[in-house]
Structure formats: structure tokens, C-alpha cells
Amino acid sequence: MMETPVVETLTFHEIQRYSRHIILPEVGLEGQTKLKNAKVLLVGTGGLGSPIALYLAAAGVGTIGLIDFDVVDETNLQRQIIHSTDYVGKPKIDSATQRIKGINPYVNVVTYNQPLTAENALAVIEGYDIVCDGTDNYQTRYLVNDACVLLGIPNVYGSIFQFEGQASVFDPNKGPCYRCLYPNPPPLGLVPSCAEGGVFGILPGTIGTIQATEIIKLILNVGDPLIGRLLIYDALEMKFRELKVQKNPDCPICGNNPTIKGLIDYEAFCGITSVETDRITEDHLITPKEYAELRNSGFKHLLIDVRNPMEQQISKIEGSRLIPLRQLEDLIIKENIPKDFPIILHCKTGGRSARALIQLLDMGYTNVKHLVGGINSWIREIDKNQPLY
Amino acid sequence: MNEIEITLPTPLRIYTNNQKKVKIAAETVDDALKRLVETYPALQKHLFQGNELRSYVNIYINDTDVRHHPDGFRAHLEPQDTIFIIPSIAGGLK
Image 1 (cartoon, chains in turn brown, yellow):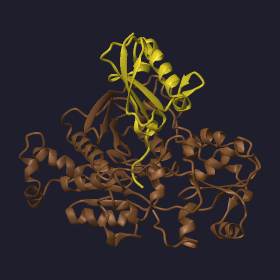
Image 2 (cartoon, chains in turn brown, orange; image 1 turned 90 degrees about the horizontal axis):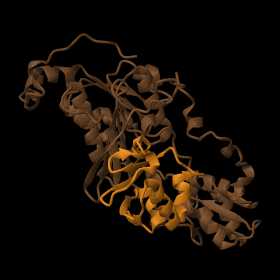
Image 3 (cartoon, chains in turn purple, orange; image 1 turned 120 degrees about the horizontal axis):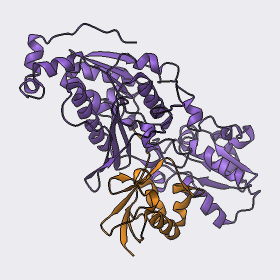
Image 4 (cartoon, rainbow over the protein chains, first blue to last red; image 1 turned 180 degrees about the vertical axis):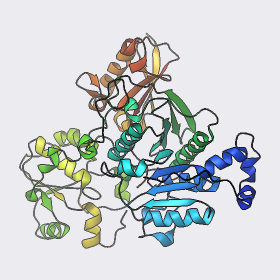
């Protein structure tokens, strides 16, 4: 929990630094002092978190909390503009802190090098004025939502996929929450992630900047916040659409008779620890080394790549048949493969191929394995001439 | 019967031959969705569970969530109306 400090006034240097803000009637000395005393928690310092942190720091938000357990990866740099090449392999929160301090040494950066979980969320979030959701997965998104509703803290939401983004403000005291908009997450595998489907690098910049704008407006208490409104942005069409979001009186957490009164098991809620994954046993796994031996032995089998077509432009295992996971069920029926024919499935890192494996088991296929660690492990261990992604 | 436009989100376009916008002749929202999945059957399981619209898919007539429209899925459509299908998306960071 954050300590509640006494109200801090602006120093001579700060007044000079923020003068372009201070001469705005909507900000003024009073508003800039509010910014200095504001505490904002960013959940994630990636695509969305990057521009948000940069702008909040520049604007003089006094305390910025960063929670992220990830390290900077080279594939992040296409869009996560707070991080730089010399921080590859180092914790994102260290990289982000150094950039924030470089922009504005007056900002107090509080870091949490850990995932946000149902166990720590209330303690981490309590004491912040606003939480900003820059997560990339449903379990953290619902966790952030629920924790914010329970603590009565506004949650500034953003989400992106390929060329489209969404933004809204969920203020439990004034409007709907994320569960009012989407009561349940989609089942695993039905909606592709950015790692699978790709993301236009500038898109999180646009959506993150909208989130940063909303955060600063909330702190200053100016303008019309995105409460009860979902902003949809299409970068290809360069169109913004606004949709109404109403508070759901039957919402399980912010409705009239809430059934969720504390944080829950979000992995189970999102189907991640479902009994499904327990069905995958040792017999269903094949390591890159074992698979290389199998190939060398001339063993007759079908290798199915369940990734998306564009991913094959980066890397490919020779002889694989491309059947994207989302079309697997429909296309495999057309192929008319005998149910006992040996099938090896692979994807990028093993998540989608595991889901594909369960689908094939459900369809009655008896001789299916999936490549542990996906094509990336295959490249690391066997075929080092292809790029990792 | 009015011909209205349905706008599909990126993740569902692979089921409509990559079309972002589809024109459908329909009187009501219910009608429009039925005709949509008749034309593109692969959409069925992504939009519906049995006869129920999936809870992570929202349908809007212009800017209003059809679940909050007084007539719900029986809401009458005018030629200038657009239906937006807006599923939840999770991407952000990694």
C-alpha cells in the first residue's frame, strides 16, 4: 500500500518546466500541482505502457508505479518505445525507470518486478489514484478490473489487435466496468493474441496516448472522460468510432447484487488451468531432438504447422503442412486422414499446438504429438539458420 | 427488405473471405445475424454458442449495444443502419 504524503507544491524549476501547461486555463498552477501529487499505476510497460509512461512523466505526474516481470526482448522494440536496444535482456521496469528519469527527474518511480496476481493486486493497487490497464492477456485484464472495482479506483483501459484498438475509462463510481462490457473472456484459442496475429507498431502508440490523455484529464478533472463510452480505432481506415457502454445492473462485480466480493482465480476463470490441459501427457510431447531423430529415420508422418500463414515467412520446418489453428477442425475433416495416422503438430512456442492437440483428440485422432517449445525451440536446438521471433 | 451493412472486426474476417463489410438484406438484427451466418457458416461458432450470442461478442446497431436496445435482437433496421460486431481483444504488450 502506498503512503499518503502531504500535498507537495511546485518548485521554481518545476514551474519553469511545466510552464506550457500552467498557462493553460484548464491546468494552471492548481492543475499542475494535482499532477505532481497524483499516483498512477501502470500495469505493464510494453506497447501501451511505453507511450503512457513517457507522457505521464513528461506531464509531471508525481508518482508512477510500474508493475511488470518481463525482460526487454528484441521483438518488443518494434513498438515498445520506452525500451532501447541496449536494454535487451534486462528487466522492463529498469529500462522504463531509466527513461522516465531521463525525461523528468522529478517523477517518483515505484517499481514492482513481479506479475500482478490475485494475491498481491489489492495491496499493490491500493493507494494509487488511477490504474492504467496495459495488459496483454485476459486473466490480468479481469484481475485489474475486479481489483479496481473493489477498491473504487478508475481503470483506464486500452487494448489492441493488428490494426484495431479499443479504449475506455471504467470508473466504478461513475459508470460501467470491463465486466459490464464483456462479462466473460473468450475460450482459449478462439481469439488470437498479438504474438500470433501481429500488431501494427504504431497502434499501441495511438491507443496508449489516448489512455495517457484520459489519465491526465481524470487527474485534472477537466473535459469529458471516456466513461460509458468505448472508443474503437481502425488505423487502416483511420477512423474512430464511439460506442455506448452501459452499466449492467446484473454485473457480477459492480451490479446491484454482486456475486464477486473478492478476487478470484483468474487463470481458472479464463480457462487456463482447465482440465483440458491435464489431458496432455508425456506421450503427447515430442522434443526437437526426438523429432529430428524421427525425421532422420524416415518415419512416415504428417507435420502440421498450426500457425498463421504470415508466420511461415519468418520460419518454417521443411515438409510441414500449414493449417492455422482456427481452421484446423474444418480443414482436417476435408483431408480425410486416418484416425491412427501419426500427426505431429507445431506452432511458434507450443501453446497453440497444445490446443490443436486437444482438438484432434476430441475428434478421435489417436496418434498425435506436439513439438515442445514450438518452432522457436526447433531453431534454437536443431536448425539454427532461421530467425527466432 | 432493407439492405444494411455489417462491419466485421479483424479477427473474424478470415471467415468472410477477408471482407471487412458485408451487405445483408434484413428487417431485424436477429434476421441480419442469421443471414450473416447462413452466408458465412464458419462464423457461427465464433458468434454463437447454441442459439445464444457469445458473451465476449457485442453487437451494436450504430452506437447502441443491441442488448440495451428496447427491442433487443428484434430491433428493426433502417437502410442507413450499420451493425458493428465488436468482440473483446486482449492484446497490449508482449
